[in-house]
Length: 358
Image 1 (tube, one colour):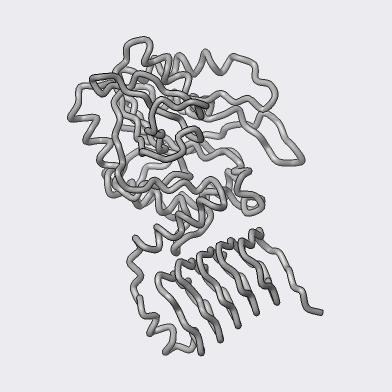
Image 2 (cartoon, rainbow, N blue to C red):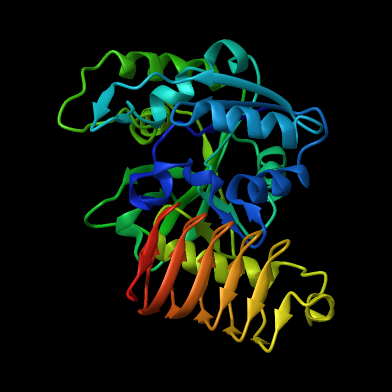
């Protein structure tokens, strides 16, 4: 089985953080998003499994990082998706369908497991594999029941539990089963999948359109391929927007096994001075906290200095320096300096400087 990860996009909804790094490189609970996902995949796939990353934006940064940190377990492959063009020096791409098509020569004779770099299931991916091998079907789509299905790809089932329809962000959803960032296509349907993707790729795009995978799956269903669902009962964390990033941070911290939950060693070393830590809080390496109240649900990167701060429900990047900050539900980028600020929902990118003092 081949794993495919389309990771070429810019992540506009997470700007300004994605000006300097891909969205999958945002750091939460001590790890980058892509690390959390790949660690989860290691629990379901054997060592030596092939992964094809479709890269584009920040391709060198992604490629070098993954080779250093994950090539010891996975057999990594990289294919570049060229941008359609640029808007103010920011590239834009032709969509998920065209990204997957680029992997054709590598993966077309095997089962394909496609996962997205901004979706993280709290459950194991192994349930999808189990459903595929236990049922007589051509493929499986990972789903989760949501309250707002109109914002997702939505699955409708027939009386036998087979996928009857898949619709992208419908105004009038037929169900609340939302596609949850993973697809498994069996090798008997993969050749036809790529034929349809290739036909779609020849259709001209205009006005911000993209070649997606949803209509291709719908056509496969109409041609008689049998698709089932794998329902995740626990949360699927969506890291595509700042507000969902904060919610995902909260859940990951709850799931994380922090080695020193009382932070006793940090207090003894002098890195926490006259401060109160309200768990769960992740504190990175060589981080100093002075005269502050931190938590709950705060992820702090490496080499951070927090002085006279009150923070909760927030993500603080590596190398940040915050002094006299009172805030909640905030995301602060790497190597950013903030001073003398009382404000909720701060959203500020990497290497910024803000102070209200002279």
